[in-house]
Amino acid sequence: NAGVTQTPKFQVLKTGQSMTLQCAQDMNHNSMYWYRQDPGMGLRLIYYSASEGTTDKGEVPNGYNVSRLNKREFSLRLESAAPSQTSVYFCASSEPYRKDQPQHFGDGTRLSIL
Amino acid sequence: GEDVEQSLFLSVREGDSSVINCTYTDSSSTYLYWYKQEPGAGLQLLTYIFSNMDMKQDQRLTVLLNKKDKHLSLRIADTQTGDSAIYFCAESKGGTGGFKTIFGAGTRLFVKA
Image (cartoon, rainbow over all chains, first blue to last red; front, side, top):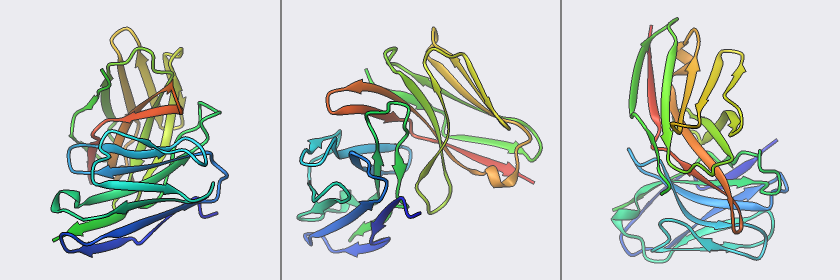
């Protein structure tokens, strides 16, 4: 009963390095999301994928790219990491065609950019 | 506008009731949610209320919705130390590409033994 799985759980990068955060869900949900969580600011949406084959920008997309690899997997890429991207990143999924369905979250990736 | 506002901290004694408040701005919101985040974990849904309801009770949790004032509250009865966590209020509404969820900044609940 895995739900939403994120890897890695922790990562430290140097400024300018690139990396991809992985997310997979086993609930057959159509929609997937990437958020960042910063102290006092709640969750801010970076990108989302309403369904397989589509991706859209959220509130804070600059510096990130995403790929909806298949229905299960949605990855987030930092091409050239900056200290301002130090944050906790959460992936979530939901079934949008049932509007009472909440989002299901992974446990997060704690990313530090030095 | 799309803002969900919550106070950042609340401290209560074990056994007391906790009341966490939230205000939102979008009257077209269809569902309003309360999520709980424990240290080192993601958010988990606690409860939710449909916008045409005034109140929902689920064991120790009571959600009150004042749609006129756009005010949502979560009451936790007999608060326990295990209730210490961050509580997020969120609103959801339909839009292109499915339903969009807007989260508040979270209220950190401290429970003193």
